[in-house]
Amino acid sequence: MENYTNNMVRYNSIIKACVLLGELCICSGLFYIFYLWAIYRGKYTELTATLPQVLIIIILCYLICSIQGGVVLHLRKIYPYQIIMRVFRNVFYFSILTGTVLSVGKFMNICSLFFPAYISTLFLLLSLFRLTFRDILKRFRSQGKNIRYVVLVGSTSNNIEMYHELSDDPSTGYKVNGYFDDKPNPEMPSQCCYLGRPEEVQNYLKKNSYIHYLFCCLPSHRSEIIVPIINYCENHLVHFYSVPNLHNYLHNRVYFNMMGNVPYLSLRQDPLSRTENKFLKRTFDIVFSLLFLCTLFPIILIIVTIITKLTMPGPIFFRQKRNGLNDKEFYCYKFRSMKANAEADTLQATKDDPRKTRWGNIMRKTNIDELPQFINVLLGDMSVVGPRPHMLKHTEEYSKLINKYMVRHFVKPGITGWSQVTGYRGETKELKDMEGRVIGDIWYIEHWSFWLDIYIIYKTVRNAIHGEKNAY
Image (cartoon, rainbow, N blue to C red; front, side):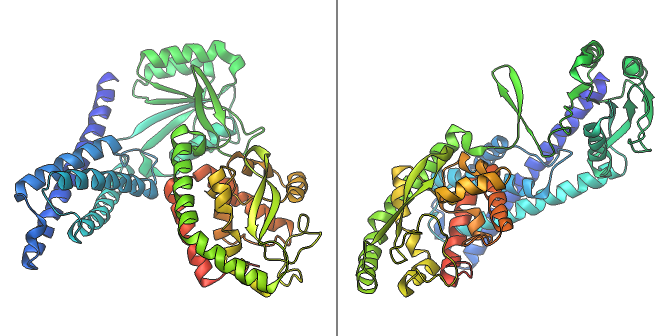
């Protein structure tokens, strides 16, 4: 068993080494091709050092970034988008590191088209290379090679699902020998053999020393059986995994965390709970809002003020209390797009709302009415991107009607959000419309990334230019 474990580690190391070696060849070979192309075009002046010097810098920089980023395609459960995202991250860091070294060292002019064209092509080739390599590995494992043998202890719904995760796709390279339980479970797939009672696990492992993984879902009160199994696994190089049975009360994914030495499970990933992500998002909010408020906003403010004063009486700004982070109330600022009315704090705008003016309708269609909220962003009540803040009345009503509605208040509300760019902007005529918006908001909270925010901003601008049917 020890020899097999060493072979497993060596096998993964070989895969990683092959991937890195192949990528270094692509990295340097592609640069050489671009260099020859530049000479052919008569634009080889981008290089102010010798080609070998630049190639050494490129190889060292990529090696640093790829080792730090890691190779994930050898993992048995990995998806193409995860591989592509890892390549994107490696190439992004590589472009920054290489660009800085080449520029500071005056080895190359990176401001020309040569460098960005090289980086873009490199990303495409490395993605294709890793996906192809991954496909070869999957074919190799589908043929019954490099197999990992598994046994299950307990047959609750979680271990039944675990069996399907391990067995349904042969390319993952797992083989489940069977399961142990107090008695055969008719709900277990017939292909999964009943191996005996949990007390017989150790004897089975002694006779079958090639087993790699054991997944146990026995309840904690059976510790007198579980602890000896753990001890045996730890002393005989069998990987022991505890599978908590949560399906009695949870039907969604959960995530493992540690609080000191105490493990616990959370209901969702929460990227914005990390200090570094909060700092990144807040820094972006401050910089983005300051740039806008100090450049375009004064011009827009003058234009809006003149037209508003000419078309309707009353103030330029509309201020309304809304629910924000942790359900804290704050005043949300907008350009006023409606006539002054007593229902402003309780009634949503509708398509042919008589309270709207013609100029107000234009502002709503183009999102101009939302621009004063950059003041809220600068004050810290809002973010550029996040779930849209709702009126107090709506929060009170919908929190009673929609399950998990209040989850959207775990982050700051935004000027724009994922739900708004995916079809859930504007009036919520039916309960299902608000339910769809809440689902989108929770998805955003769970999948937040800096690049997702950038994409949402791009989609918002694009939709504003092309117009939105729900913008009224």
